[in-house]
Length: 127
Image 1 (spheres, rainbow, N blue to C red):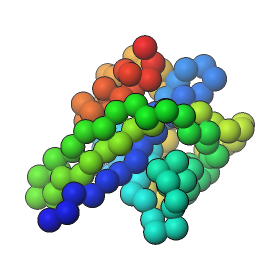
Image 2: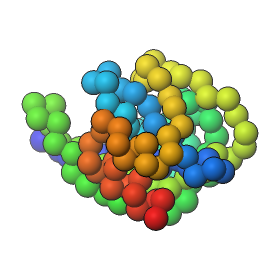
Image 3: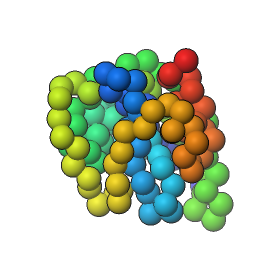
Image 4: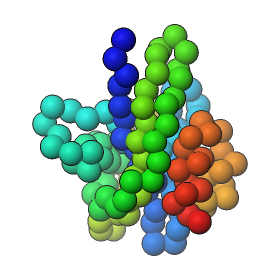
């Protein structure tokens, strides 16, 4: 079985808060997703995904981290995280992928229920 990849962002607003989405497992997660055939780069995939998931345009920054997420029977996926910032002021629009979107302080994010790999990326982005 091939290892899939998912690109995620630590999206920080002007106040240093990180945007997280609540997934169907009731965990908080970084936004992003798998690349499509139309995406020319990870950055293109992230810009498309954030428009789809939150209705927000972003400026993608540097690579933060990568790790393998074991989803048990669902398989394993390589998570690659980037730092990003909103490209402009925008209201968040919740898509069907998440039940909620919320801005968290770094401390709140690190206490939220989510995989440790996401927490490591948030910590790296907010040091």
